Image (cartoon, rainbow, N blue to C red; front, side, top):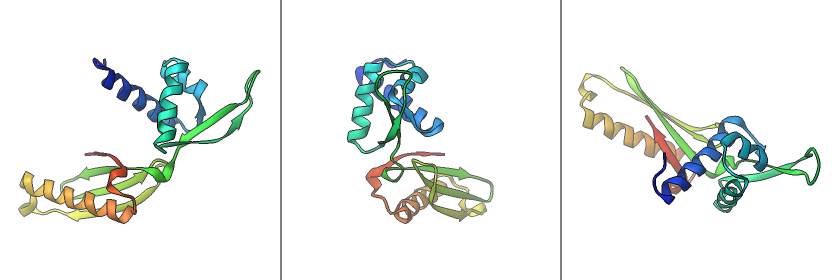
Amino acid sequence: MPRTTRELRRSNRTALLRELLFDGPTSRQALAGQTGLSAGTVGLVVTELLGEGLIEEVGLEESGGGRPRTILRPAADRALSIGVDLGERGLRVEAVDLAWRRRAEAFVDLNARDSDPATVVDHIAAAVTDVVQKASLPEARLLGVGV
């Protein structure tokens, strides 16, 4: 449970982005229902995310009455996430955009000499740098790395 205003804000942003990333385009009203956040909180967070270019408005859907609802989705080309899969024989690093499209990947063969943790971390760092460059987005657009 978030303890500070900053943690609460981050938690709310994460909840909305997670819904949009995993469940696809939807309206502010649906986001409120899916996340349990108030309509006001959803409105504030959506305004922030739109301002940062992380999400975009892509159309309208009819409501059961009243004004049509604006549909939101992640702005695919605005950010990257990196996944690192470390296996026995090597590591695979992949960059995906906000539409889950693979933008770049790298594979590093590992052998017994490379099993030292510091060496493995160096290989991971180099591969992450490589895929960010191949993906042609500024490093500042990297949302996170999951190992």
